[in-house]
Image 1: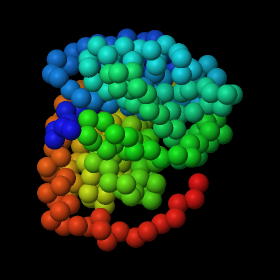
Image 2: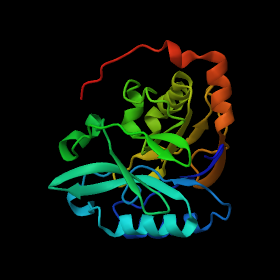
Image 3: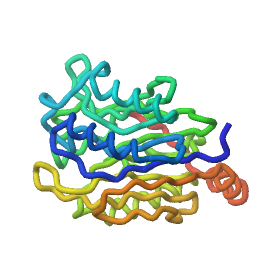
Length: 260
């Protein structure tokens, strides 16, 4: 069990609907990480940008990107995660995969499809929230629009880290900043948001604002907006236990019966 967890957060531009070019771009960024890390986090739909053109972009779970991720996880001896468009049994999913150095794969399908962009018309919504175990840390991975729904992200099973991968546009970036901080505070968990930068094929602008928050909602990263950059953050288990034991806020949470 590791008291600390070293995480590389990659805030990057994405080439519109071009998986091969995005893999090459990310090859350079991943290979540039010289420090030993436990986990690398990529943005939402990191092979394409936030596209509704699932038919042309979708891969399978045996496709090139999954193999590429497994190769990096093995070579870097760390886990790697992000979401991509997956075709499975005739349905399209905005699917996050978490791949460990051993090749073990855990997946999460985005629960809250973004109706404003018509995502619900193209992608099948997930129905299962997950908490995975990795190096003694309990981790809950979610995707973009899920951030607006606190009951879904609620810390009912004692996770240590909540993270969101995203393509969150500039006009609503103040909500992104506020909600990431709120999720950290209310769940007494580290909370990480990984957002892309640049313009997509529909001319929507993404300003980054990736962020890492501790259990009190303090920002502990140095990300700059509108800039491609990779930052390595060390999370400490002692920090979580110190404030949970001292404050006990999670003991007073309300109970919900969540229906999906």
